Length: 459
Image (cartoon, rainbow, N blue to C red; front, top):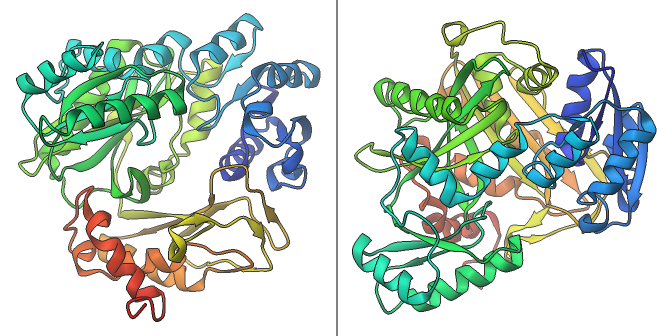
């Protein structure tokens, strides 16, 4: 097994990786920006190297500085977590050239699945259903107009190198397409440095369902069931649950088999997630593949009993999977709430600052993945996610009740958070009934804000 791993990330995911390494007897090296010198991950690791100024481009995205830190500390492998360099084929190749193990899939697979148009074509080759759309990027507005007419409105203009809900615009008619096309290209260029886009039919009110995978270097692939990630605000996931209240056993098996088939077709190795859209008639369509660990992976761990990061490290070292699909059993129900330092009453604006007091929830079936502590100052330079609260219970009804209880125990002062917003979701009758799609929060948010902000409705 590896003797030392460098974690090229920060926050809760860096802490989670450090814990997994410690249980495997592996020493860890943290990297931090100047703004993160007092961060929990920097304190928990066996060693820590400051790699640059606060902006991510000068630190957590500085591949050369990270590789230098790895060499200087004698680390044999790099775990990229999620975000930052986790889906950079260039960084993965740099690791290979430096004879450092990149804990993730091969660079060629990251590249193949990172480009949405080639990923779509790969899914077609693997026999995985896809949404009707262009076979590749569209080179001009006139091409986009022609494609949209053939596909049929409404359509989505999507960034080829996109992710995280960026670079996506919807056009419901011919008149709206020019603006949607230009807006998607502009946002794609600003976010990803790549303004290529493609056209896809817009599926009305779908569910966002994803399948968690794990593959070893011997070609064995297993899945850990589905997660329902349909509770989203502006294409950003807020709350996830496993299993989905909408998916039946037959569809569950079909989607799991399709995801495994895609991984086998690409020669995938590591953890990964295949994301699908599922329409009201339970037709499912490939959307994208994330070639990394996901923010929401703990709900899959909760219902299966596996530690996915531990397994990811093992297969990266070259160890074969010691279990098959039949050994993976699904027990109970799990929900994850993403706790963000943001102000729902002020347009969900990020709320960096110092945590004055902190009381965390506990009790049976409660897990908290976080890197915050009392007195910690949340920097303004990074994502506003500060904690993931995960519950597990025998069934969905009990999981909802347990999450409500846990949220009411979770007290943070000094910064604003979205804890009360999550409580509003969990008390909503449509959510309790499992009656929601990705458009749910678009319809409900204003009502939820009226409930949790005193006097807002009158103002």
